[in-house]
Length: 575
Image (cartoon, rainbow, N blue to C red; front, side, top):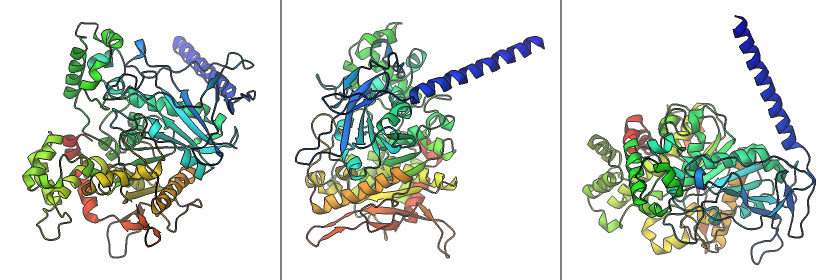
């Protein structure tokens, strides 16, 4: 007994000491720091480093009310022995508060290495973030924060295409942050060898490291670490979901709210597929000996162009312990305030071919089996019952192409936002909202009008991006009058939610109130009524600049999503 008592006493002392050290460290982080100046622009002092930002406005606009800081490291460069490992923290020790080095943060950092890899584009030393703040904001302002994860299928894209300038300019009550994270092989190579001498899903862990940096330092820029929203579209929307279900809900979230747009989940690879990819990668670069990981850490990344790698299941205790759909269904995640939705025709972007190439049910069958080899015939037959053929009475699908595209869309883009919204409302979260984006990307629509309101249509309105450099293959151009009006309305909804959890709380430029996802059932219904906003531009000629409405989500859509998100079906589609 004395030895046990002694051990308990030692443990208690260690815990108390650890808590005291942690408290001292927290106090040091929060301590007032000297104000620094630079002839280059405004400076924010973090103690271990300081950054000078840029007050310039986009071309043709008056002097900005927004200050930009770019290329701020949030972790050590993942190069050399740190390749294929979780991000390693920076040394943030305040060594000499009177002599803090000032870094030029007036421009963007390099994008992470892309697929296809090109000489001169992308870098492994890419774990940086960008910050937009109201120029008047300072430490103590405690403004809500939005952290944006770009899309691009987890293999390409960068923050460059998705500046948050317009969001912060329109709503001077928020701070904007965007994050670069490792992609493809460098972010998601898996297998037993990586698990033994590295870390799985380092790209997702990069995102988490950036969120933790925000928790430690955003207050210096005027942000409130207790009021953080994360957002993203496509693979960025999938990132939002995976950050929400990370560690099966066993660890607290470094954010409070989430916006997931067109959640992009391709089939998550099986363990067998993960090992096959690893073998292909290692053989491509000639790393086949017993020191395969050491070899891969020193080899060139020529294998990037021959392999596409996305997040994987890394098992109990891992970052992603199970399929996201299963984690949501079983409630293994922390509650968040949530906006989720998709574009009306998200699926049409990825249906291989044109409408003329989908004439029969067999065409759709071949397409689905090509994309999801694990779908059984029983699942396929049930799906065809839920999606009536175009020649059946009452079918909502005018063509077989539309039918196939809707199936693809529901599996990949549409149903997970409904699943997560439903589960959150069941758990008593009130601030849960759904949307459908119903205005096309004008440039892409001109090229392929049959795709309708295709994938990335919402990005065209939410970002004044650039086509220079890798930006998830999106293109942007000046908006006309009705497009600009919808853009202003949407940004108003998004930023209002960031501030309060209610997209209609601020003085957003809208004539309509965005109602929650679930409302009281009509007296003649036994089911709750699910609602969403439909964001749509008006007609320039008629002067009707906004057609945004609230609609009830059709019961047949809910039924289809319940089918695709059921445990036995997600085991086949692996979402």
